[in-house]
Length: 71
Length: 289
Image (cartoon, each protein chain N blue to C red):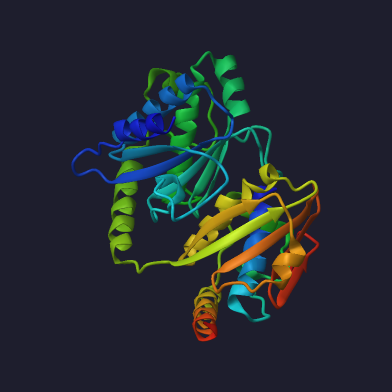
């Protein structure tokens, strides 16, 4: 349960951080997790793709700029 | 209590010259008494020392995170810094004889009820079994999921031979694996010096209904380690008082989000993430938005 909840949290938070509506073909940002994904996340967390990582940092940078502009 | 925590850490943190050191932040969710925990700490440090690895051990409280705090338990120390849960909770989809698990993102756990059962059956000090299980999982955290060997502490299944060796204090890493441990740790330490400052993210988790704080807490370090792999340091804040309307109408900061876990059921996870201007709901474990 903690592993599944952690993955759901990370998935949904990442959508907000990225600020875009997209899913990846692999990893934690997959639209549908298979039974295999659910089993493997108990042993090793699903990973972000490199594009996901870039989008997270880009999204956070955009939010930072927006907040500075709003102040 | 705090003095004892820091003293205990200092006593085990004198690294041998030339040895790479790891930090283990231990969450005693099984509420072991101090004596067992102390013997476990010493046993873990001794086993790792025989593999050429120094240990810095911190006794940490589960749950709340605050990266502004001076408490080392609240800080992510990078890729040689691990969290270890001594737990009474066994993740689903695991076998009855599962003693521990490791998430190579940086967290691991040892299931204490089975440690106690094995200690009774094999007439071994539970602290010795727990220490060996911790070291095994640390081996996975450093060497990866496929680190099992035919002999030594990284053997996948332990039998009478292993428990005899544990009791004698002679269960070790295979020599070539001890060398790999040191090489991998030195590589991580050298990488860590070059890594840029991670982005920081403050997340407030609000729970209600069946999703009490204790139900959600074990998931938070796992999620934090997943974000750490993406170069983001997460500080968790928690609240059992849900005020979705207030939060929904408030303006979220760039790196501050509030997450509402509305209900947790054994087979159904219903979660809603709110920030100003954006919401998403996940209502099926395998169907995400």
